Length: 69
Image 1 (tube, rainbow, N blue to C red):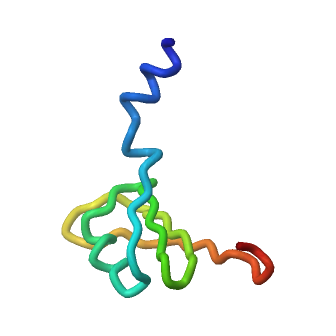
Image 2: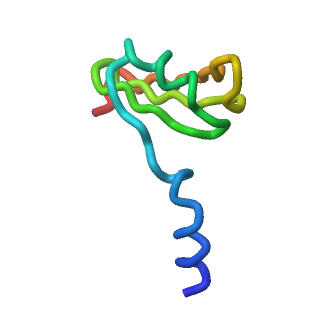
């Protein structure tokens, strides 16, 4: 029960924003460190590596393998 309560307070960590690869820069402007973005057209996962502020967060991407689904 305590574990479930701890997870309930951390919902932003588990949520993943999604959209097209072209919209990732708009998302990066408001992203905080650790937030994730799934590009549905290119099937890439992006992670914000710095906090939001006057500059957009820098993004680190993971590309799926050619045989993955």
